[in-house]
Length: 239
Image (tube, rainbow, N blue to C red):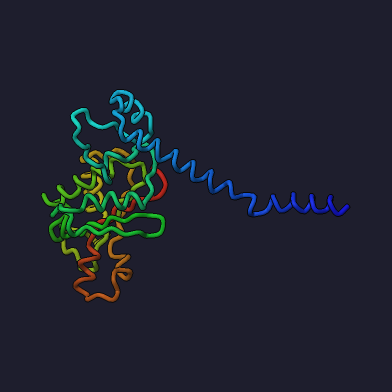
């Protein structure tokens, strides 16, 4: 009985931590084999045709150019967007930001999130002359650039005009008519720039003036209030 008990104890001891020491040796062997194959590949001369076929089989990858030159790295571009579906607003915001860089026409354009929407605010002074709903040449250029991005997305788009409380004089019965006419002018320009989906065009007049930078000076608040917003929704447009 004592010999049997001793044999049983010996078996249990062999299955403890000391019995797994072989894993260290096995791991070393795997690492050495991996290093060997990496060095073997590094010293090899791969077949360009087979490598090209392999590279093209990977989604989202492109094969190297035949002349050996590096391809330009695509960042956030309008051409990379999917026209058929709504785009994530975070990604879309970065696309619009990339379009603003180095373009004097868009230096005063502001981007921001408002609930479930991305808002591109176009200052009225950028687009129109005071009291006018006719787009300036600078405004047309700015909308041409932004329309190239908007035309490549499937998100629903609202064009919303705003005004300050300053009386419009004899040209417009009220600030609401002026803000609506400006929003319609922006929508028409986006159409000419290639945007083909449905748009909702609205005018708010000076109805949202109380929400505009209440901490700022009155002159600055009025300047910020005169604007047209492109409100890009999370969901897709009708068509």
